[in-house]
Image 1 (cartoon, one colour):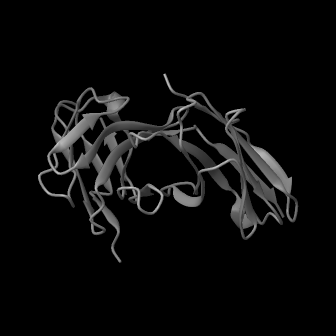
Image 2 (cartoon, rainbow over the protein chains, first blue to last red):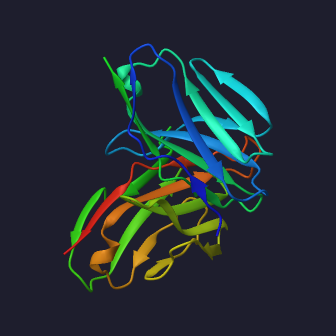
Image 3 (cartoon, rainbow over the protein chains, first blue to last red):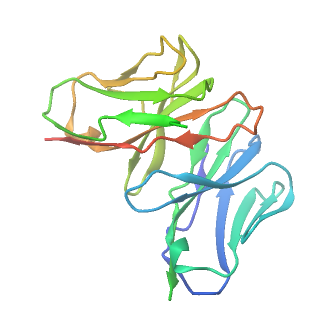
Length: 110
Length: 114
């Protein structure tokens, strides 16, 4: 069974620090990779997508993909209390079956 | 831009009753999905649809039925609700890949089976 693994946390970081969130996946055929943020009681919202090895930056967020190691990460620079949420990693293959991790809870301490 | 709307947002029902959760999207996305989210399990795929009249099972389809007669609608029916189906249900959609096949979620339907 295809799996996506994340540390459930909580990951606590002080305001202004870099938060590093990690995710591993089991299916080497995975083609697309996503990070979603989910506030308590809300639906997941897309933060970033990444499709090729390397880094992709968008504002304070950087996604990193290493297909050889089956590893994807999300860095949040200058973390803010409003970044406190659960972050979901998702992967998909060509068949459009998205597999989600259980999420990492991030707490940014003011 | 309405996006994806789900109804009802909150529902309490009794064991054995039939319940239908509605999902409507305004983007004309080809793909639509139903997920349930439970503590400790994350998001699990119930059913998905690649187009009107094409549906397929996901990871946890037992006890659920879907249909997709129109591209924009993808209702999920619990034929005979059980307490284990108490969960939050998310409908989602994605296009055919032209914009990277990102999946977008509705606001969720909170279902309690008593």
